[in-house]
Length: 135
Image (cartoon, rainbow, N blue to C red; front, side):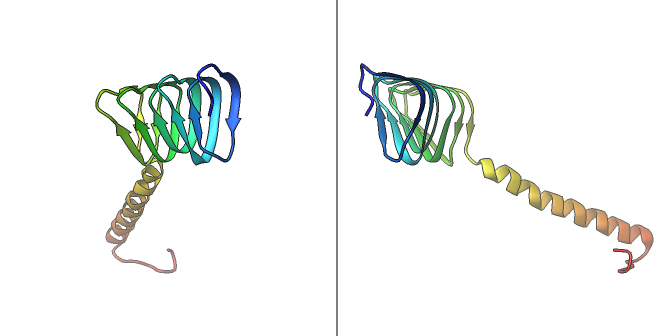
């Protein structure tokens, strides 16, 4: 826990859950754990964690490997990347949300395969047949 009277400037890393009630400037990287920003917490930091729960104020980008929750008392300014995002009624949020960053590259693959098949079909039609030696 980072208490209400504590201010940290720099990088926070570790292997356990973290509750922030004070101030943090910099970055927080707890990939396998949960980061909770209490109502008195003020962060000017990028956060990367398994689960991020925001009840206080966060300015920075947040990456939740499982989910990000901004509660009704939460105030966030920045971008969110997570497979699941929850904004409670009353939450304040300004930024962008990317709920499936891997999906963008996956969804382009079938389109590319379709375009290749389409151009091959056009070549076969234009040439009057398919010469397997030239393919």
